[in-house]
Amino acid sequence: MIRINLALQGGGAHGAFTWGVLDRLLDEDDIEVAAITGTSAGALNGAAFKSGMVRAGREGARANLDALWARMGAVDDTNLTNWMRAFEPSHIAQSIENSLPFAVGDAWSRLVSPYAYGPFYRNPLEPVVERFDFDEICAAEGPRLYVCATCVRSGKIRVFTGDELSTEAILASACLPTLFQAVEIFDPKSGRTEAYWDGGYTGNPALYPLFNSDLPEDVVIVNINPLEREEIPKTPQQIQNRINEIGFNSSLFRELRAISFVQRLLEDGKLKAGEMSRVLVHMIADDALMNDLSVATKTVPNPVVLHKLKEAGRNAADQFLTDHKADLGARSTVNLPEMFG
Image (tube, rainbow, N blue to C red; front, side):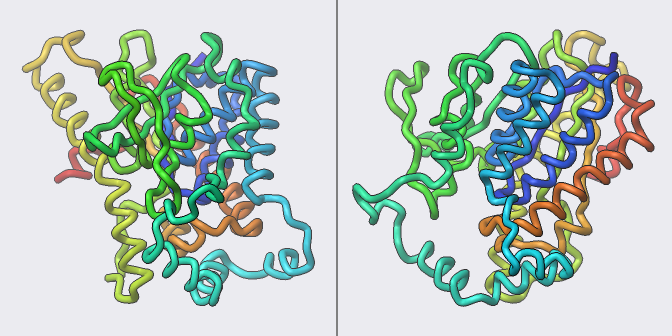
């Protein structure tokens, strides 16, 4: 049995790519997911995966993921949706960006605080997350699950796991402050109730919870925010989108750089084996597709785009397994020195 850890990035509706990756990994009977760390959409995917595994194994996880994304908008059999299937995701993204409702909503989010709605406010993700079975998510069985959020007061990351996992913890992990009110949760370390925003600001996702000695060395990162964009953003939407991507990748880059530094010390004999964890880093991504999408397709879950993202995730995972399954447990397939050279 090949044991791996999963690190699932957040990125709104683009998390449907991760849905496809997980769906494909579930086909591999000889791969076991030992632990999952996730932020935002990655936290939702991780919770659905774990809950399903605890309840009914691989088919339970698959069914849970399908149900989650159905609730997120992947099911729509209207004539308009069927007609849109002929278009590429990039065309749909441009259509959404150029639409009046999106322009009005985007401008509204920059001018009006989510606190302005008073007693009429409700987090739109709450009905989705409330459908999870937290007895299964918090269970000792199945993969270990870590969910990342950002403490508003301190600016530090908080990682929820075990009995700390709740509707509020997952909503906190996905709380974009321009759209949602901060989620308040008691913190036993500070002894007070803290407000939390999206975990992507401090850990997208956090990798360090996976460095326990009883977990496998392999960390497979499912990346849904493109690391590079060749074109310089010029429109307001393009600029805002790239700011979002850079911000949500920065914490991951910091941890990968630290891993690269430690691995080099181990290889040079400056650290003894056992003093620090050896980490084998892998990545499943489709930067070409993500470069065709934008913040519009992150915030507006179009059924056609969601299914194309799922298909792309399955294909990317399939290619990774073809190229690198034999490398799991043996070596990293991400060249970290080259990445940071």
